[in-house]
Image 1 (cartoon, rainbow, N blue to C red):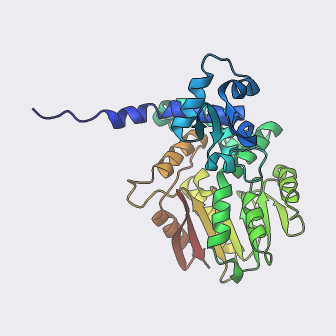
Image 2: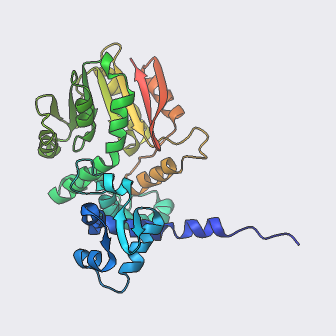
Image 3: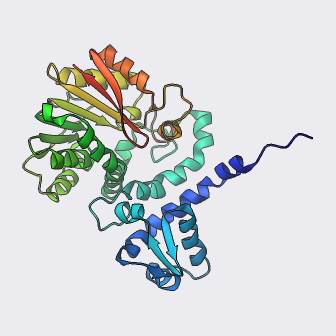
Length: 336
């Protein structure tokens, strides 16, 4: 008799939504921040978080099983990763993207089937023109979104500050900068650089507050504007991180052409995304991010490194290469 195939992989995929929600709730509740002061037993941690006793132990042990908490005897503690990235009191806090995913994306992904059938966004705009109009019109949503982008970009920003040869350049501008995590990390690592961030005017106060918290307001400046309607600012290096995937193909090509026009000869455009692998088989994160663009935008989609290199060549860039940054993040570097 032939042996039936294992159900394990299917079952694992089936319950990933529950594991994700347990983690997102832990970030929302501040579990990792509460444990920043040291290990706590179940009763103490439960009381400090204001949780009902019924499922608190199961919840904390779920986080242990997920690998984001440790348990020593009866006391719970942060892992090195959660202590470093998920304590809200630390400047390297990367939980903002989890907060945004919990508040917004988790619910919207429940309508993925509808999105696949209709090709229409399933978020606040529900088929309207722009997610950014909906997010940026509300100060609370705006701050939450920008903070989420910082959490999403911080490890990548540090990797880019380390891996790109910044010594060869003097100025840079981050296009669609959000709170300014990338300009801050680059400026912290390279004292000779002058830089900035470009985004819609309403983002300016949030950007300036964030930059000032690092004492970089003399070297890192905000450039207000709408990159869909106006020329891009000039600099030796322009950066588009998680920008191109928001837009349809014609819009992607238009933005790349604007970047080419704004750069001097020898200038560089860096595009970084969760690039889909060229064979479209392995980078699950990039493929899921493309589905997220279906849910979030009227025409956005993610793409491969080969796709982006081809679009850059169409825009006039004579050389374009793909380099790994960190985790699922890759950058495409085009030279004018």
